[in-house]
Every structure is written in C-alpha cells, then in structure tokens.
Length: 149
Image (tube, rainbow, N blue to C red; front, top):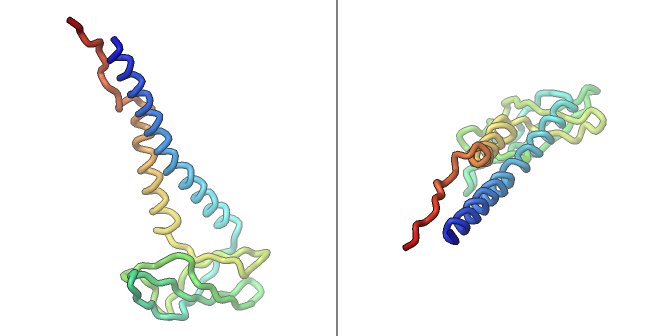
C-alpha cells in the first residue's frame, strides 16, 4: 500500500512538473505574439528598400539596413533586429514591408513571417502539446495496489 501511495505522489509531481515546463514555453510565446500583433495593428505599413547586400558571416545570417519614408515624406534608416538567414537574405534594391509608429516614425520594425509568427507558433506547440496531454489524462499510469505476502 505504501508503494502505491508513493506512485500516486510521483505521478502528481510528474504532472505538475510537465504543466510548469509547458507554461515556460506557452506564456512567453503568447506575450511575444500579443506584443507583435498589437504593435502591428497600431503601426503604419510602408515599403523599405534594402541598402546593403547581405554579409555572410560565421553565423550565416544577416541584418539588412533599409530606408523607408513616413506619410510626411521624411526618410528614415533602420537596421533590422531580425536575422535573415543567408538563403532568404534580401538583396540590395529589394523591397521589404516595414511597420512604423505614426506618432514616432523612427520606431519601426521589418515584418518577418518566420520570426514573428512561425517560430513563436512552433514554441507554443512545444508547450501546448504536453500541457494538453496532461490535462486530458493521456499521461497516466495504471496504479494498482501491490500484493504482499
């Protein structure tokens, strides 16, 4: 009987641990997606021209420098915070979508489907799948009393 109680406690501890670990993926991802979508919905879309050719470094990624105009015609330059990997790196002269804050046009970001949507969704699923498995009970053991004697 003592063995069965320790298994039950261990089972609950495992479930709580998996739920906590899952939340470490889910919460930051939801916050990041909310931040991106609210910034995007409160910003103005424009096109920016890439000013530099991609420089392939040791990390095989580049951050392009772009130039864009706001609604008043003022010109701004922006160094991307998002890494574009060498095979998807924009070439000099190409156009990218840029969202800028209408109240402070110097605050802008380059739209990147992979960086802002696909990667966070992958991390969300890494947390959501085990979370749902625990909640739905698919991670359970058959605990039966151990016969003595």
